[in-house]
Structures are given as C-alpha cells and as structure tokens.
Image 1 (cartoon, helix red, strand yellow):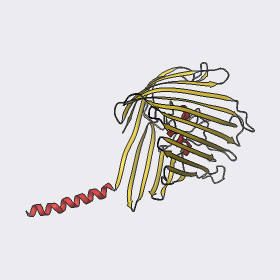
Image 2 (cartoon, one colour; image 1 turned 60 degrees about the vertical axis):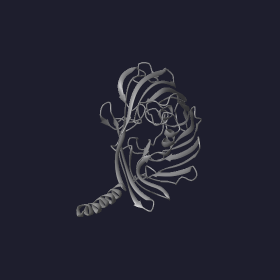
Image 3 (cartoon, helix red, strand yellow; image 1 turned 180 degrees about the horizontal axis):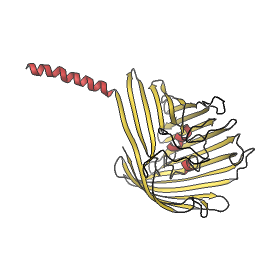
Image 4 (tube, rainbow, N blue to C red; image 1 turned 90 degrees about the vertical axis):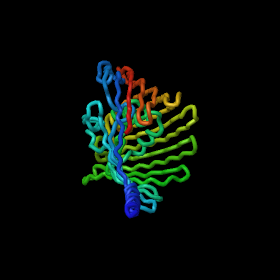
Length: 361
C-alpha cells in the first residue's frame, strides 16, 4: 500500500512535467522533390536553354528544403518561436537553389529560405530576420502549382533565371507585422533595412492584404525595393524597383480557379535592365479522383523599355499541365508537360516532359 501511495505522486509529477514540456516544442521537417525529365526551354537554336537534355533533377514541383522550427508558450496567449530553413538540391546533394551566376545571382546563403524569430499573440505577429517576400507568398497561394520554380508559369516569369524581380523570394534584415484574422481579413507590412554605410542601398518596403470568405479568396500586395541581399546582386545608388500584384481564387467544388495580374517597374536602371514588365496567370486545380488532380496554368509576361532603358519589347508565355497523385498524406507522384515560348528573333519554342516524386516529412 505504501508503494502505491508513493507511486501516485510520482505519476502526477511526471504528468505535470510532460505538460510543461509540451509548452515548448522543436520540430524537424522538410520536403524532398526529385524528377526524371527531358528538358528544353525557349532560346536560340543550339543554345544551352534550347538544347534538349534528359536528366535526374530536383525541385521541379517544389524547391526541396530542410527546416527547424520551435515555439514556446509564454502564457496569456503569447508565443515565441523561431524558423530556420535551408534549400537543397537532392539530385547532387548540394545546398542552396543554385550556384553563383555572373550578372544574375550569387550563391544562396545556408539558411536562405528562412531564418527568423517571432512573437505572436492577440495583437498579431511580429517577425524579425529573413522571411518570405509578400508578393511571392501571394504568387504561391494563387496559382495551382504553388511555389514551383520548375513548372509554375507565375513563378518562372517573376522569379529565378527568367523573372525580373530584383528582391528574391525572401527578404533579409527584415521586420514584419501581421494583423490577427479579422472576419477573414489579414494584412502585413514588411520592411528590409538597406544596411550600407554609404547609403548606396536604401530600405525596401512591402504591404499585403488578404480576404477569404467561403470559397472566394482575394489578395493584393505591393513592394518597393531599394536593397537586395544574396542570392540577388546588390542594387546601386538611384536604383529602385516597384512590384504590384492582385490575385483571386474561387473553389467551385468541381475545380478551384486561380488568377493574378502584376506590374514590375524598374527605376534608375539603364541599358537592357531599364524595363517595365506586366504579367498575368490563370489556372485551375481539378480533382478527378479522391487522391488525384489535374493542374493547369497559363502565364505570360511582356517586357518593354522604361524611360532611359534600351530593353526590347518581349512577350514570354508558358503553359503547364500536370497530373498529381497522392500515394499518402506525405508522398505524391506527378507527371507534367511544360510549353515555353519566348518571342524573340531567332528563338525557338521549348517543351519539357517531367516525371516526379515528392515526399514531405
């Protein structure tokens, strides 16, 4: 009997300890995406882009990454947390999204996907550190291929090698505030400090608003960029870029439809970088079975010379259709065809065919 009496307090104590421990958690997570495909992009005949290549590649449906995140319950509805996320290329084992490319990008820093701390409560959420750019976040949310740098027309025409955004999909040295959800409405403000002693780079600012009501979602975002960090090249004194985006989606049950329209304007740039870009995307996600869906998206961008620039007028369109089949909640397989058409003198169309496997953990 005495043994049972002594055991009961011990069990109760362990229960309290488990409860206290549950208030602070750390999680390891990520996604690995690999494909076998035959790739060909629009370009001049015989160029590296237009030459067909069959290869095992990574990061077509989503950019693979490894993450660490933790949150601590501070009481009274207040939480503190952190997020650390690193891109990777599983086909080679390399870190980051890319190697350095002269004139376009630098190599990624290790925690280039995210590296931040936040406080969250009834007042909303305040975040410090590297975090997702607001127009990129809405681009991901309002197209059927999400954040696919390999296959999503909206992403390819705005970011990465073929896009004209100067600020990358993530902002460094940043602070943001997001409101609590107010009857379906949320808003975020984001600022990135220039951090150059000679003031050659100026701060960057962004605003975003989202509204959801049943099957309908609407969003708009705007940013003005005066500074950039790796992997993008620094802006110089007098250079600035603005980017405005509006988005909508509607879930009709038989299909979910997406649309977006945006404008990018470069200021203080000369030569071929002196340009304005308008872009749009329409798409749909169509469930055909309980575990499979068809994804389709068409996007186009039009570049034209800005005041003082010499950029050519160029129309670039991409159409992608895919079938995505869930093997489980965390693993899916997909097949996709992408048609790439950049209308420049001497350019030929490109067609890519992709089979992919993706696993989240």
